[in-house]
Image (cartoon, rainbow, N blue to C red; front, side, top):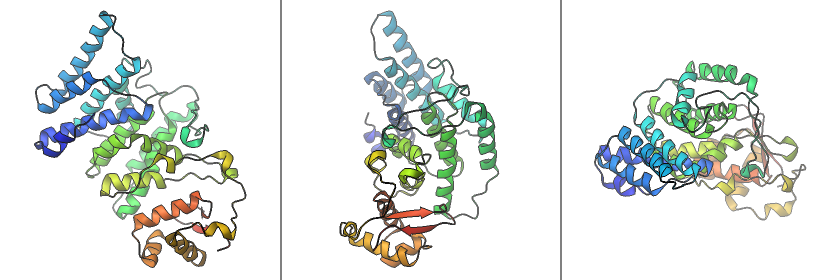
Length: 350
């Protein structure tokens, strides 16, 4: 669905409505869903100001009632995508938010009422999900008997946290850790990512960020895969959980950067990763000049920050982030002891 003409040329009200509809529809991709042409037509009526968001939702509901009576069938999941899109658009249009478990569960209930029997209800059974980005492996989600306690703890900790003394880089990193931890709880049996995305957008707005909805609309599948990678460890295979991919997304979202967001960059193949990560001299011949400079710098200065690296090799912090991520994927560089107090280990004879 393309609302670019509205976004580029419309007055502020229309532009804002077009952006929330684009985000609402785009977020369906996290579960592989597509909306109908009827939804697009209805969304356009709302964007034009011909109908309210409530009237748009009523039209969507009536459309599926009438299709059922006429024995016409769309995929059940198309109906889900249409209805949830309308509800996301409504929630994103509202200027209210509270950083509480009640707000989080309320978003889920509003999105999926009449679609899932458990809408707004905390998951009561344990789950696993095979992930493409993990080559069929699963993230370890919170145990069902600990969800409520963990959700309360994480949100209370975030509510008491202050961003006052943090740089923008540190603020983004903290938010990435918070939202990835919230997602990993997987409080709901289904619809967890869409709920978390809507919650994240509204929370960022409450912090004063100007959120570019296009990022969620155009890169929702990347957003989900980044959350997966932020919560997956396989130490034996040399894979460590990392929020770096999510941070790239957030840098684009909040700072208007143009970091490459390709799902293939997040994909891991467990079978192809060796537990012995040492590399031969020949591997270094395949590196770019910037990668070689970065490795040499970190071999001599393992505690260097990404800002230090950027200053030394004459590149932007965003470029350095891409370089270190690429070197880690190649098994030539490892981050030890975490992000804040850790150091770099060069895994090559360079």
